[in-house]
Image 1 (spheres, helix red, strand yellow):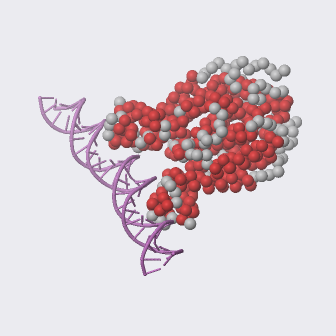
Image 2: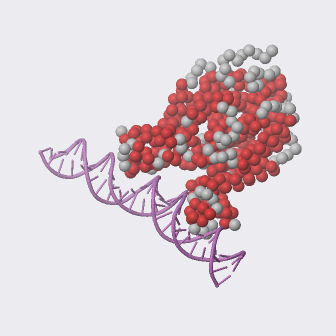
Length: 219
Length: 219
DNA sequence: CGCCAAGGTTGACACCGTCAGGTTAACGGT
DNA sequence: ACCGTTAACCTGACGGTGTCAACCTTGGCG
């Protein structure tokens, strides 16, 4: 099928050129060994092609998410978060097309995106079932996603700032987001008893922190 | 000066069209009542023009930041954060040009951006001088900025998701970022005594929460 | 065999960023 | 007062882009 060939060509162009404006209809067609308007046999316009490319990326993210289904729900959620950031930092061009292309704004809800996001909502719900924190799972997942996206997007947008290296950045973002989320979930309006607050932040943050060997207590 | 006229025209185009790809050299020139290549008398290329537009936006942000210099350093930092998000949500096109245009990535460190960011670092340092939390001010400010950017950027990129309205979103992002930051700052490796942790999160988060009337304690 | 639709091609249009070359107007030195 | 220099601007053009109308081409079917 030519359609698949075109999508592969688009993927390759993105990966090889390192910039999203190498993704032109003409270049895709040429790479697939076909004339330019042939692309319009399979895609309504350029936006449709780009959207199809994004579907693949979302699918890959979805696959990555589904792989980090470990036993502990907090470890699973932390794994999702880390995998997400790693993917974005490892595939900056794809991530930029996914999230920063101008037309992504008023796009109809992309099914693949919603599906991938659903994985995160599920992971959040699994955590909530343990009773460690509570609230609206979708809202919490949105907040987490925002935090992860913020770190990687800002790194991609302003790489000249004094960033830590990738793994440290990921660690920091996941932990800050985890701590903040659990505390916020525990105090929508006023503050709960301090020891509750600390205990919950403890459990959530420590689990999100992922290091299984980190339970030697403070002296 | 024609240069100023061109920048004003570019600003107007962005504001009126509501999309960044209305910002073409030809449109800017036409709006300024001048021929297209006249733009090249004042800007080396389109990127230079866009960068100049961004300088103005950064300047405006800087002005907004400097206005929220309240007495309490936490209130000031919270004010900065809220003002930042409000600006981004109120001027989505400008914010998108600032942070999501493809060429923003490898741009030389934009002085105006660094200066505006400096305000946030200063605000963080002021907070740190109170002893409520500690760490590297630049790193913490970067983390805060990431959190703020993440929320607004994700809203702009995926507006079809079930977002809360703007003020609620701002509230949530600022509080989550604040809580997360102070907790993370208190536990780089292992956990401190719980009551310390809670107390600090308390102070920081509550202050960032901005509501001055919120000090009726829990019963 | 003859037909016909799906899928491809050629050629063109409008728009974009950019540049070479010509025109104009202001200004300073003699 | 005149002329040369120079900066600012314009006309016209080039290559590249997304897109479309019109024309083939080819394989399957009555």
